[in-house]
Length: 333
DNA sequence: CCAAGGACGCATCAACCCCA
DNA sequence: TGGGGTTGATGCGTCCTTGG
Image (tube, rainbow, N blue to C red; front, side, top):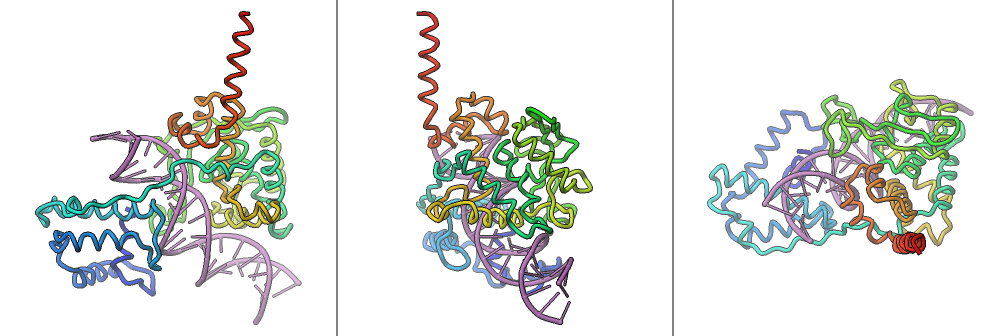
């Protein structure tokens, strides 16, 4: 739905003020008046021009392949609906031969940070912002959770103290069950910036236990001691105790990157985005020889996706496999 | 294997808040 | 009261599962 509404931006003139429901009606009426007849789409030349236009962004430059795909998807759905309503006789898109832009499906190995780089990045996070307001210090644990436990950002943002087992020594555990995807105030049921829903691709109420390495447990314990938790028990929160917006931690991350990385690495894709910490975590585990089934379980995705997505990052696995086979054969020598 | 579909993330600028 | 610190809104981009 959000995607569909987004595409109205191509039709509706950008409003100077917030769009109230009555304005939507006005906009739809305007679109009706300003549009060409639907049947014009049956002319392949017109259809081709429409497809061509969907390749561009509002500023006129070519959009990313995934974005092009989404724009086209929305059009295909609209056309299907028109056919269903008897407003079009045939499928105008089928008449136009059109190649969909190729998209990259694998993780770029250059984004993966090694443990030393990850540690210095996390350390740098604590130096971001003033010490008193602690813009960075408050978020060290958030990023640590993405790196040491492979959490997705929206999972890390939602972690609460009651869901964690944080022993003084050794491994801990967190039970993930809700996430806080950022949707925008206009689109949530509650009218707040974030929605509350179940884990990605799973029914509401489903949970995923995630083991927490000792280094992370220590980090989170310290965070709770220093900053406490939000009213609802969340470990990480903004200055006013609210849910962290992606723009908030993204800014901190970029400042930390500038502090931690030498100029030569700063311009590379190395850990460019917070999500790359998760990529780093998963590829590190796989290369350490952890069973892919176990990695997939901890990460919360399927083995198939895991292995195809991280194919380019798996340079150490063949060696490990060879060693294991050799050891097994030696045993029976 | 690949396209579809939906959910989520990131960049950037505007707006707001807080404190000296 | 002004300016730095911080969060919010929005358009574009990515991740990942499903189903043919």
